[in-house]
Each structure stands twice: as C-alpha cells, then as structure tokens.
Image (cartoon, rainbow, N blue to C red):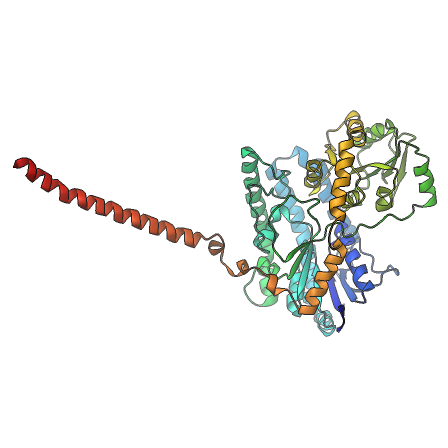
Length: 516
C-alpha cells in the first residue's frame, strides 16, 4: 500500500451476497479498481449470480469449494420467493414463521459450509494472510465476512440495505431507534403513526428481535469456536468500522443515525446510455403517449397464467407502449402495445425522455433508478422489503401500490393512469430526484471515500460510540433509574416516618391539654 497525495492504492477483500446485493458491491468494486486499488472477491463454487469466469471483470477471484451447486442456491431463492408471494397470504403468522425458519436453517447450513471452506482451509487462510489486505467489505446478510476479517486482523466495512426491524443495526451497531416515530422495517408502517399503529410497531420490533436472536443467535457458538473464546455474532458485528447503508434521505423517514453509518443509496445509478437500435425504434414509435417500463426484478422469471393474463389484459388497454421484462409463458391476453424481453437496460429506459411510468416490484435498486431519473411508479411488491419500499414511495407521493394476488385488470389500468395523468406524481418524483442529486458528494464517491478512509487510518475507531462498551441495563440507564427510584422511595420513607413521629408526639400533648 502506498500513499500519493490523496490517492491510496490498497488491497481489498470482498465477502459478497448473491442476487441484487451483488450489483451494489460490483459497482463499488469497479470504482475501486478505477482508482488503482487491487480487489479480490471470495466466492464459492456454488455461486448463482457471480460469474468468476467473466473476462470483462478486472477484479480477482478466490474460489473455494463447496458441496452444493448453483442449482441448489437458485432453488432456495425460488422457495423464498414462492413462500412470500403465494403461500404467505394464506398462512397464519406462526405457519409462516415455521416455514421461514426452515428455509433460513437451510441457508445457514450453506453459509456455514462457506465459512468452513475458508476459515478451516489452512492453505487458503495462509494465502489470504500473506496478501496483507488493508480492509474487507462484507455484506452481513451472509455471515462470516466479519469473522474472516477478525481472523485476518484487518478492519471491515459493512454494505447493507437493512435487517428486519433494524435488529442488527440496533443491537450490534448500537443504532438508536425510537419506536414512536421510527417504523420497524417490514412493518409496512410510516413515521406518522396513530395509537394503534404505535402498538403494532412495538410488537413488530419485539417479534423481529425474537426472530433475530433465535435465528441469528445460532451463530454465537460457531463464532466462539473459530475465535477460541466466548463471543457472539453481535459482538463481532459491532466491530464494523463503517456501515454503508444503501438508502438516503430521499427514501428514508427522518430518524437519528450514528456517525459511522453512512448513506450511499443509489450508488449504482448513472446517466442513461443510448438504447439498442431496435429498442430505440420501438420507443420512438410510441409517439406522444410515450412508454411504460415494467419489471418484477431478476428473481421472478414468470407468474401464474392467471396473474400474467390479468396484467397483460390491463397493459393492452393503455395508450402507451409497454416494455415488459418477462421470460415466462407468453400471456394469452398480451396486447400489440406490449413487447416482452428476457432482459432490459432498465436504467437507460428509465432515463429516456419518453418514459412516463415505471411498474415495479419495489426492489431498492429499481426504486433508486426511478428516483434518480424522476419517474413515478406503480408498485406491485412481491416479497421481503418490497412492500415497505413501495410504502415509502407512496408516502413521498410518487407511487401507487397494488396487491399482486388481489388486483384486477381495471385496478392496474387505473393505477397507471393515475401516476401518469395526475401531475402531482410526476412533480413529486422530480422533487425527490432533485433531493437525490443535490448532495455534496455522490453516493458512490462517498462509499469509496470511507473505504479509503478506513485504509488510510487503519479503522475509524473515533466514530465508534461508547454504547458498545455498555451493558444493556447501562445503555438504557436502568441502573440510574433504579438508583433514583430507591432514593425517591427512601426520601418518601423518611418523610413518612418523620410525619408519623410528629403525629405521635403531638397526640399526648393534646390529650393533656384537654384534661386541664
């Protein structure tokens, strides 16, 4: 590592997570390489979305062997999607939790195999130590990145969207969260809550805390075994130098944060590039009505025939041309104005002047591209954080929300016409977009700055709050409250005793006076 002016050329290790999480990390990796940093990505032979053989990649890959393959990983992801989309609406909470816990246990077994393949591989660990990495960037959704960093004695940084009810951020990162106006993630509440909603919010926090400790707490013994001393997952997570949170105040409700939490939402967004020639012709042929961009993300390849027919029927009634990313069976009700693609350049389409609206599942990456380009949305959330994301955008006044399992064709038609023909949606989308762009530092530059900062200073301990060193009762000042209550009761006790004594001494004197 050498320092030349303000440019630091460092050696960086990456512990990624699959799916859309990889897109954000990959954007950071590309920027780090542009700035002459060396980047190595640790991936398993069972990786589903990360292609180590892509010759266009400038980063290096350290591949470790696991027993499962890409097919197993994709099957698990598919099971999660089906559970949230099709099974959850017909389940009680306890049925859903039991099914969800089983899937998480399967995932944990796969992640633990990843961990063992690295941490218990002496040859690989020796090689990693000899490379003298300056920092690790880890996605805490996939455990062990932090544990590898601690074992290698290097600082680590988290790249994170959220954990349910901010459980890891609150308990491990010591992020304050006031439930009276800070809705728990996945609660589908806003920051303006009435009495019953505040009760619901408190319950959401308690339930998600229980799930966090019951499912994530299983890792405590593993972390202790690897480090050879009693510890917990949360204790190790608390050692993160910086938490790069993939949102910003254009999306978030105002709430308190800590100095080692930095917003980098929309870091993957960029100005639009020209569309492929055939797609540009279709867009231009739309005329004055323009186009609608429709995508349900990379994890949902198809829908049931009934749902796809309902959607296609609705789209056929719109005056706009619709570019729909969909690789399932061609719907029977598909109109002439709707063109299907297996893949679309989503960012470039959203940045096109003829784009009038975006029909989206509510993934964070897609939402930020819509924010970046100022495009109003019709949200059809499918699973995980997507309902919460769309509710954020609905609260901001730039989205309408529909239920994928209940909506009918006319409801989708009405929703699209509302966000296109009601000028307030476009005005709000432009306003939120202006807020996003009006930052002193671009999100990607901010992310890279803090990574380089940690490398330059070998950490960021000066940003670490003292709350990490307090016990739970000290953090909530329960010992102080208890002491003050004891003092109060003691004072009241003394006052009562004095009053009682005075009453007893006064009574005999009064009796004597009466006798005389």
